Image (cartoon, rainbow, N blue to C red; front, side, top):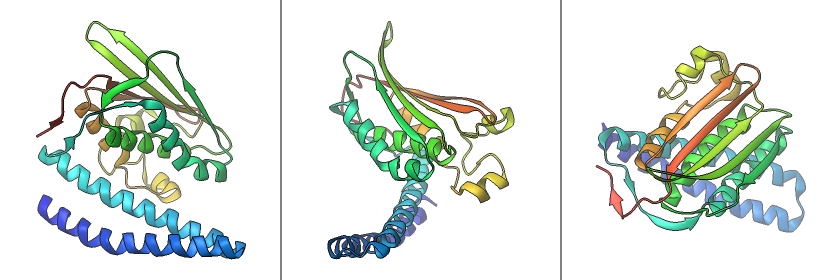
Length: 236
């Protein structure tokens, strides 16, 4: 099954990347020529294509996780750059929803040794969920470092003022292909993979995620990571 998914993802990603590339060229031409009526259309195509590409990558990642073959590559980096990039990615959706994005990075050492790509993947999943389910509200990203007897940890909280979850929905939040109920899937879209993959990646990076929520009020997703993964590794 994993081989089938890998082959299918390749066959899907190749034409999809071509669509993205050509649309980016069309968008650049439309902007340069002042064809504002076409710019929005091209941007919509890009958003949808990138969303589909993200879904394909997540399905492949899930198959790697289940096979114990998802690797991590450790680098030293400042978490601020990763957070800024993730926020920039969801800003268009937040703006369209009338939602304010707030960043709160605490004082102290925010340099860590981890996998920047996988961390970015986790943050984008959490922020995408928060922005998708929040209209005319606020999404706050709060970053703190904690020193404990077990080591150094980075905590990233993504707090939204969105639709929240009931206790039953919360219990299924990290189940693959689950998204609350059918009405939520129809209204907001999505495959229900984001939190599942985020949790598994967080555990590979020496941490975990915790979700707290109140229906029709808010959701807080807390991502915890080991701030000092000691060596290059591939988890198998």
